Structures are given as structure tokens and as C-alpha cells.
Amino acid sequence: MNKMRKIQVFDTTLRDGEQTPGVSLCTEEKLELAKQLSRLGVDIIEAGFPFSSKGEFDACKAIADEVKGVTIAALSRANQKEIDLCKDVLKGAERSRIHIFVATSEVHLKYKLQKSKEEVLKMAVDSIKHARGHFDEIQFSPEDGGSGRTDPEFLHQIVEAAIDAGADVVNIPDTVGYQTTQTFYDLIKGIKENVPNADKAVISVHCHDDLGMAVANTLAGIKAGADQIETTINGLGERAGNAAMEEVVMALKTRKDYYDADTRVDTRQIYRTSRLVSKLTGIKIQAHKSVVGDNAFSHESGIHQDGILKEKSTYEIMTPDSIGLSSNTLALGKHSGRHAFKNKLDELGFNNLTEEQFQKAFDKFKDLAIRKKNLTDRDIEAIVENRIFVYPQVYQWLDFQVQSGNKSDAMAMVGLKKDNSKVIREAACGKGPVDAIYHTINRLVGETYKLLDYNIKSVTGGTDALGEVVVRLQKDEITATGRGISPDILEASGKAYIDAINKVISKRSELENGYDDGGEDFGKTCRKG
Ligand code: KIV
Ligand code: ZN
Figure (cartoon, rainbow, N blue to C red):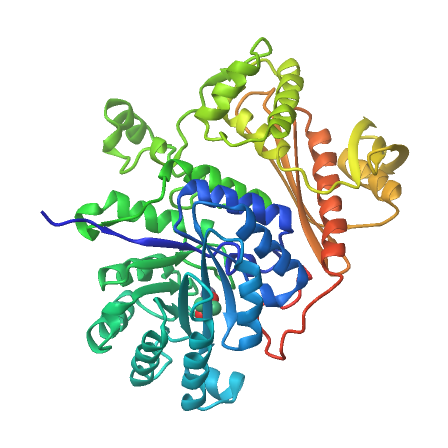
């Protein structure tokens, strides 16, 4: 019987995804996401581009040291200095992969690199040879090589040379999202058929979404014989983003009959991962987005509802369960003890908490169970996600009071703990209660922040639902996302603001030492927001 192909999933949310305009994650956030990606079951996590800054180096290293059960990759341009830096970064990885890239299209050669094809080919070969023996795997990408803007003969030549030099994986990026499904299929098929040693390496595809075809092109690449896909959660990425992992993976799972290919991803972790990425980055998921949008499994019209009640498959081609969305069932209440809480966490997949993390989550759970009668699985997830990953915190939220109405300005009083010892209190007015809280906090921390974005959402239904607030703040060139949850939306707003301020402070110290970017402008060479 024909054995189904296993497609490797190379997740680049932390590298290409983090190049989304306005997104910048600190080390702790990257670590949190990398751990979830490992739980999700991706094969490779691209941790970042270590040469771009000290903060990026540290984050990649922390991921390589701490995140196990998955290959960790780091990006490098085709030069020895950057490759050597990646050696240090990936030393602690269970399995390491260097991802070396150099541009190959006419337009990049002429304007960006000002180099000839021969020079670029030599750079690729020399750098792959230099990397040999220092990493478990070597991946090479001809940047802009899959967009149709690289001379096909040169593309075949450089792919062949890269494999000869020692590349285990050759990734073909449609860097600018220019391809159509047919042209991309032909390009990948062309490589498989015309590059004599193509069968000695894994051929990978990396598609951008400028024309909305990243997912379709990725699937076309698989059809043409690619055995690795490069994707991001929620389709984050430069400009219009990259191919969305959850869409490609669910397309393969749902249409096995057509693709005859599958992945190792535990699809029941998809929903949680998607929400985590949205929370950490502050980038909302549109309601009607495929697979993970709020409306993806809701049925509005009477005819559809009637059909669903009679037989789900009338209008559902995949189940909410399959992406981990089903259990919004009653979970626990204030009488539930540590044992029941632990069982619930295990069931939800949070089975590797330290004792300290568990205790923090349990304390928060008890606290909330008193304020909200019945806690659902979604509530428990929100508590844990918010509680167990503790960032360096200069300020801690203590308490607040607000007076507001429609006849006068609102007034807030806020108490914070500074450096885990000193309690500080202030009061200030604002146009509404949230504005008043934020003015008070600015006063307490002695700085004013620009509020770029403010979002509020209820974690579950009901008037006593937990409110979740996500804010994006800017201070000078640093941006940070903060989140807060509470049954009181004003408290959630204050907590989210403090969370973001703590991250700005921690990023400021990460930014102190930046590396020289070598002159070539590549993405966010210095993490400045
Ligand atoms: O889009 C692109 O070309 C890239 C490369 C670095 C692989 O992200
Ligand atoms: Zn890319």
C-alpha cells in the first residue's frame, strides 16, 4: 500500500513572523511561544536571526538551551562571521540547523548585493562548506529564488551547488508573494526534475501572501514534491505575511485523499497556539479567518443551524475538536482542590509546569473561583497562560479604585509594587475610567507611553466572564504588548498596561548592546519595535 508522505513543518513565526510590522517580542515571550510550538509538534523552530542584535542572540540561545524535542534553527547570511555566531547560539540545542541564505534574483543581485551570479554562487558554496560539521543540519535558501524573478538556469545551478557543498535542505522562497499556484508548482517540479542531485536533499517551500496565495502556493509546492513547508502561526510575517501553518496543516489533514500527505502536528494544539501568538504579538485574528477565526465554526443562518443540529458534517468539513476548540465545558469551581486542578491542567496539555508555576496558577485559580462561580476550560487556559510565564517585573499591579460617570471626568487611584518591595500610590483624572487609570500609572512610573492599540475580549460568555485586555504601547522606539485578565475589565486594562510597561523596561535593557548588521539592511537589524 502507498505510504502517506510526512511533510516536515518548519515554523518561522519567531523569525519571519516577528518581522511583522509593529511586532517585537522579548526573550521570555519568545521562549513561551517556542515551548508551545514544541507542544504543537512542529519539526523545526526557526528561533531568529542571532546576528541582528544582542537581544535576538540571547533569545535564540535561550530557546536552543531550553526547548527540547524539536530541531532549533537560526538564520544567517552567507558569511563566516554570522555562521560562527550561530554555532554559539545553537550549541545547547538537542538538534541544530543553520539556515543560510543569499539572494539570487536579478533585481536583488543588481541593486541590493551588487554582485554577479558567480560571486553569489561562491558565497553560497563557501558558507555551506564553512558550516559543515558544526550543525546537525544545514539549510540553504536562495532568497527571491522561488518568485519567478531568478533566472531558472541559475536557480538550478545554485541549488545543485548548495547540495553538493553539503546542504541537507534547500528552501525555495517566493520572497515577494508573486507566484500563482501553477507557476509555483512548475518551478518546484522543475527543480525536482532538472537538478541532478535534488533527491539528495529535502526541498522546502516558503511562500509569502502578497497576493493572498501563500497557502495555495505552499500546497501546490507539496503537490510538486516539496517535503518541507515554512509557515507561521496565523500567517504572520513581513508585509502581507507568510503561509498560515494552521491552514496548510488542516488542508492536508482534511484533504488527505487529494494530497496524500500529512504532518506530525498535534492539531488539537492549533487553537491555543494561535491565540497565544495573537496575545503575544497584539495582532488580532479576523473573525472570519480560516480555521482559527471566531466564526470559523459558528453557524448563523437558520438553514445551516438546522443542518448542523441534524448532522454536523452537513456544514462542517472539520470539527472544532480537531483544532482543540471543543471543550468549553464546565471545568472547576471554588471547592476544587489541587488534585482536581492538576488533573485539569494535564488534560489541557499543561503537564510540564514547575512546582512554582503550578502554585502560581493554583493561587490565581482560587482567587478567581471566588469571584467567578464556574470556571470553564477557556478560563483555566487564560489563567495559566497569564500566570506561569513571569517576565522580569519592575512594577506589579496591586489595587485600584475608579470613580466615573457621564457628567464629569473620571478619577482613578492605583497602587503598584515597585521592585518587589516598595508600594507606591497615585491618583489622576482622565476622559474615562481607562484613561484615568492609564494617566495614574504614567504618573506612578514617571513616563508617558503612547497607546497604539487597545483590545478587549471576553474569554467566555456570560456577564461574569473573564475580560481579557491586550494593549500595545510605544515608548521612544520600543513597542511592547501587554495583557491582563480579570472579571473586572478596568482591572484587566490596568494589568495589561503594567504588563506592557514591564516589557518595555526589559526590552530597553536587551537593546543596550546591538551587533553591527554588516551594512546590508535586513528586516529589523536592531530590535527597536
Ligand atoms: O522570504 C524570504 O526569502 C525569507 C528567506 C530568508 C528565506 O524569509
Ligand atoms: Zn520570508
